[in-house]
Image (tube, rainbow, N blue to C red):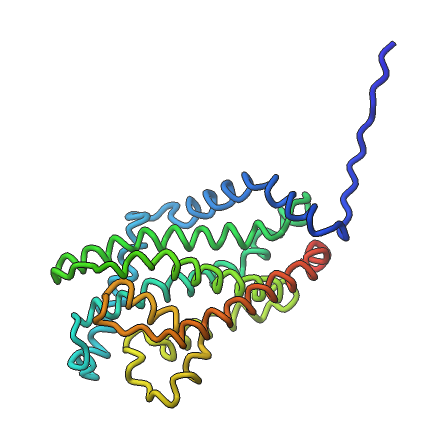
Length: 278
């Protein structure tokens, strides 16, 4: 007579961090499925599908070039084609904005999944970030097309671009962790975030160069961590035509480390209560 050995799985919300990070790796395939699902849902029943990823930055670039470049006459203050100056900043800005918009609703939109099965909840904002990252890389087709149109050849500075992309990704992820956690309890954030994104476009040097900011005030302006990142993106893409302010970038890097580390800690602290509140 055979005896069947029973196996009991105990899930402890207070388990050590080491076990949590192992679970995060063990459930890595779930990130793939969540990311792929969100990509398919986004373009389902659309006529041109993924082409919207290319059309949106192109239209915004044209609008900003008209308003800031022609009407405000800021194009005369730069040595590079103004649409290219705008696009080099618009791509990281749109990635950041999309990450916030997607990340803020990521936990709430997956409430059924959270309340039914166990998995590290950190996987959900990670998947939403990967969706925005996919759009970001696709939109580089527009950048290459505009550079070819103006016959603007990249320089060796472009080799530093992956570093700045990683910097931007960490910043977007850190803020998304804060917002997604707060949105579980305070649903007001679904209305606050779109306003903040829209307002942030005008206080971030997307349609203009940060050279317009007086040097004595630049360190205060750089408290917006996107300032240093966007200036770094322009330097990597446009070369010496766009100055690189190391202090602004270092200030942004320090703020990013603080935001990301505190975001992970805040998310982990509230994670055990998400299923009860959501």
